[in-house]
Image (cartoon, rainbow, N blue to C red):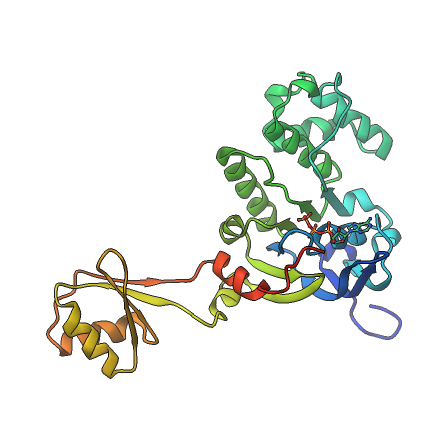
Amino acid sequence: MMSDGQPRPSAATGQIIVSGLTKQYKNVRAVDNLSFTVEPGRVTGFLGPNGAGKTTTLRMLLNLVTPTAGTATIGGHRYADLTDPLRTVGAVLEASSAHKGRTGINHLRVICAAAGLPKERADEALALVGLSPAAKRKFKGYSLGMKQRLGIAAAMLGNPQVLILDEPANGLDPEGIRWMRGFLKGLAAEGRTVLVSSHLLSEMQLLADDVVIIAAGKLVRQGPVEQVMGSMTHGARVRVRTPQADELAAALREQSATVDADPHGALLVGGVDAPTVGRVALAAKVELHELTTERPDLEGVFLELTAGKAEIR
Ligand SMILES: Nc1ncnc2c1ncn2[C@@H]1O[C@H](COP(=O)(O)OP(=O)(O)OP(=O)(O)O)[C@@H](O)[C@H]1O
């Protein structure tokens, strides 16, 4: 509790609060009065087209760039004021770089020594990311995926409550992406705060619980993935296959539904839900061969929400 009697999140809760955050470079307002929160125990996808201001925001959060205005706090504290930053926040901002001739394990041991962490943490962190078999191989022989894992191992050395990753899926093959997804979901399930930036919306749909969408430095939308998708103007459509397409289309249009034909002969019905389509079909004695609800994917949501704001700056 603070002296004014208001409860205040401790660093251990790991809630991230970005408030009125702004960064003005000479000619570019990279981040523009941005406010959002990131909750512990969830994976939050930080989404935006190229140049939207994601990296600048994350760098301000980690005290690597000084904001022009506004604040960013982790568990109620600015990064610069954290008493033990490595044990509070782990960050992976770009693919890990390390001394080429150094082995993976030695790279981590050097960081442990510099940070005052016990050297056993190097072995533990390497095991955590599945790199133990390559512990004694030199960094220059690591694949991009192995370098990404080593970067994550380095971020995990202090066993932090909060993990922040900038475009971690960049350059990974499908197996690497699958591994990353499972790993980050596992950290969130342990109650940690996981903030991941990406422009790969399809990936975020599989990974994120919440999304924060920005474009041109400004907040476009934030909320649970499902809710953001549900807020789409075009909503879900129902896909129907029937040998009596004309009859069903006529019956549905009487219910004010919109009906389009897809190239494969199915009907795409908007404005009514699947049970309604089923009831209308039954009443019209129309035989159904397929009845599926098609949800808009995040890619479509994203394009719609950021349209016109994603100009190259
Ligand atoms: N140091 C800098 N000086 C001037 N402009 C900058 C600087 N850093 C970033 N910018 C500009 O700020 C804007 C936001 O850049 P930022 O890298 O934060 O976006 P991003 O969302 O991370 O994009 P990307 O996905 O392409 O990395 C861009 O227009 C960029 O050119």
